[in-house]
Length: 337
Image 1 (cartoon, rainbow, N blue to C red):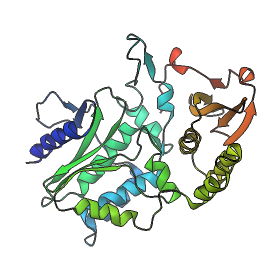
Image 2 (image 1 turned 180 degrees about the horizontal axis):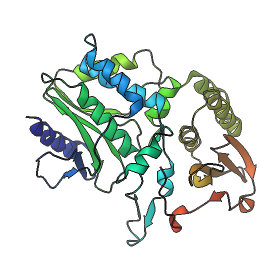
Image 3 (image 1 turned 90 degrees about the vertical axis):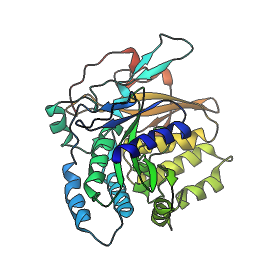
Image 4 (image 1 turned 135 degrees about the vertical axis):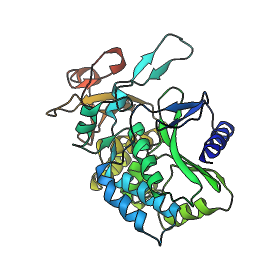
């Protein structure tokens, strides 16, 4: 019966989202559709989540929907997005009218045992990894009476993956690391509301009610940032950016969360940014974080996501051994994790 929910979900996605999508399942199923892909890696629950999953399986006072959000919150609070994957994207210039990026398969998508062991040493993950273990964890919570299933939804170009949830009563997209916005991985660390869950169908409002209850009394923006915006925006924009930077440093965000939040603030002022990369030194693997440069009032500024600073620079004098402007023009083999 769950097969029909997957087919229904795919049709709902086609009618709701732009672009072309596919559904990824664990090996062993027998749905033969051109939009179905079977994963090459066995899905496993991350060790850090196993105790929580076992606890939630035995918990009778919470609904399945509440348990699903408990897992969502746990991942957002305990993991960070591994931006290093974006460094290894390749730019496809074969069609000048349709320049696009291509994700490399070996970074988190098609991996071996050594990669999996290396990932246990830290909490950085990419969307494919999140979707794998989150879907697996949700399915562990589902009882024979729950007519619903979790799986993976991805775009055809392999650039982003999320969890799809479809059943008799609702269908939902769970995206904790939204590619284009401030991720819930970042928002929930700041105590803000969930933004990355999209409900496609909810016959009785069950999932929406659970999500609304989770978000109750949670803000969409930090009050300190709202105050800084009201006080400084349009009067002293660099002062405004520095104040936001100071606020975010108080919360001790990871470098990627810091970058995406500051980028959103800077771009909201109509300022064009240039993304660059900074190498992380003194680590076992080759790793980079995103930084950005922008021009304001005839001065160039560097937002350093690793040091979490904003300073005036001479762009031409940036150390090219540390900062990389166009990584897609290089080729780096990578077998770390």
